[in-house]
Length: 293
Image: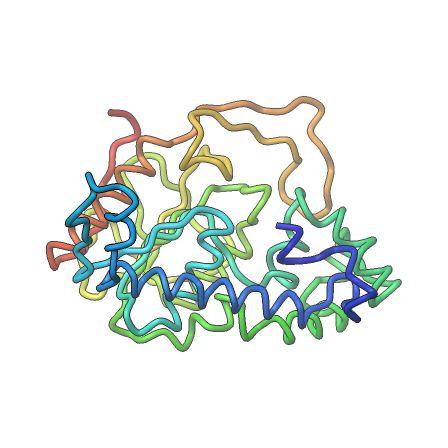
């Protein structure tokens, strides 16, 4: 992550701390690299692999119905990839977001308190991420200037230009402390997603009004969002999670004791796999996935 943001800068290369030009170009390079992976999967030459490992002679992929799947930063990159790559038709983006400086880092307990001194040191001594009632981050000029420079590589800015025929399933964790719900929901709005309610385990979005549907939800193309609760940022890869900050945030006040819970990993995987399989079959669906096996 430090290589994407280069918090300290590099005076020998004329790179400022948190230089937005450097961040933007790192994002765009990563997106180009992912586009190359799409082309490799769709029709690349794997003969070099077979030369190194003869047992893999004949290795190939069915690239006719690719679905990108990402978690966290992989979903942040995936949102931009889906928006700009004409050869990618669908994605599952778990706990992703956009608006890196205006919606994500400044609303995330895991980042905001670290970001403020860095921004203050580099651009604006008066930046304030702790008082959203009087100093909303979207109203602070320095954050908006930095964000505008990054926007050509940010999935939120690019999402509105995505081909309307593309499909996406967005999975969010309620009270996510790493990629916060304002950033999640901004991305869902950018993609024009429909909020899908499950019979158990889903949580209504709090900050935006989207079209509503109940699972099972079928559409072609399908752009859907499901927010799960209880859930942590690691719900796709970890059985357990915890909350350590007092909601709502900001302001950022730690709980007296962390609040542990079981992550909805089974439900999240069922939603993702069901969506991918149905998309590949030609009829994408958000199923009413159970909370347990």
